Amino acid sequence: MINKQNDDIFHLSLKASDFESLKVSAQLTKKQEIVETLFQKKANPIMKNPNPRGYRHKAVLSATNIKVGSNNQLRLGFFEEGSKKIKPRIGHFLHHPEIDEIFKTVEKLLVTYKFKAYMSNYKEGLIKHVLIRKSYAFNQFMVVISTQGNLFPNAKDFIKELISIHPNITTVVQNIHRKDTKLVVLEEEKVLYGKGYIQDKIDDLIFNISPRAFYQINPALMVDLYHKALEMANISEHDTVLDCYSGIGTISLLAAKKAKMVYGLEINDASVKDAIKNKKENKVENVNFILGDVEKTIEEFKDKVDVLIMDPTRQGASLKFIQAVLNLKPKKIVYIACDPQTQFRDICQLTKNYNVKEIQPVDMFTYTAHVENIVLLSLRMR
Ligand SMILES: C[S@@+](CC[C@H](N)C(=O)[O-])C[C@H]1O[C@@H](n2cnc3c(N)ncnc32)[C@H](O)[C@@H]1O
Image 1 (cartoon, rainbow, N blue to C red):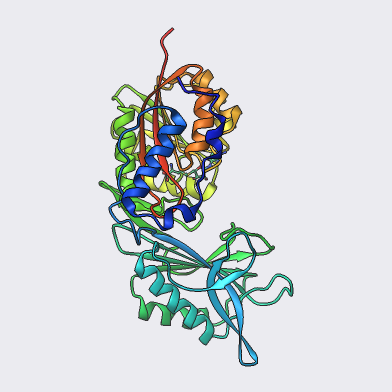
Image 2 (image 1 turned 30 degrees about the vertical axis):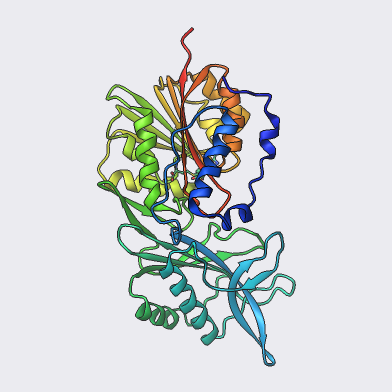
């Protein structure tokens, strides 16, 4: 049983700076310890990151203006920690190196074409953020440029130059903002070049990934994470599986190879659209994707569920969702999390009826404080 009294655990130090200066082996030991202290239980040895540096296949930089002589010039950079200020800088040791090369070219071209960063105080300028995603299997790149409003003067020439330097950019999308927001990608977009999405491959399945959809940032380890989660789920051909927080359907479509039927529940319409396309293009019949908040879609769920897989965001699940899971009584739950602390909070509720059977930490985010963790729970027989 989990020690629910262990409240101090929520105050464990998890600062990024604690990890940046440590050797990878020491980081692994610390992350293993964090998970085992939290759950008061031995976990499997943490799964190692095959590329401890340069593993990020998605990166975002934001635009700011700097003074060059008497003129303003655009620069890309990172938000300073805990502030709204952008520090001009390209290059991060966690980014895949080709992503940083593309950022450099995009910045150079934005300056050549005299684009300015959007400054919300003055309601002036155009460019807000640049997002780049690399496909792991196909070496394709997607560039998304967020702009305030729908203008993008000389887009054709800009893209022609960009593609001539980086021919493996297969799509460029303008993401259009009509309001001031911290978000990078909103609903409105215009495909400036290519198909508007990139593709990746997991095992023998091809996945379309559009700009607004979620996709793991560390695809090399993502594949091992999925394989381990499915091994823990041990799905049989008679099983109905519920994949909650299903994104573009990666886990659902992999689980469908073993299961009788899989249902994927997801709130993001762009992800569900990709998931449906992924199901069709991979010719998988025994999967259905349902758009909506899991809190609601799970309650409407009437079929018997044998295995429930859940992979929520860092906030974890709501109490209402956890209660619905307890009512549904799946035989097994595989809980994948990118924050073991919220996962632990949720599992404290689930242990009313479930036992923790296996814990598998995964070093998806080396040199950061974040830990990915998979927990297998099984329904207690009464
Ligand atoms: C960590 S991602 C996991 C996605 C997928 N399992 C994967 O591995 O790519 C979490 C997903 O949960 C979705 N999500 C967040 N809140 C949700 C909610 N209340 N109901 C349904 N889906 C939600 C997000 O849109 C996102 O796609």
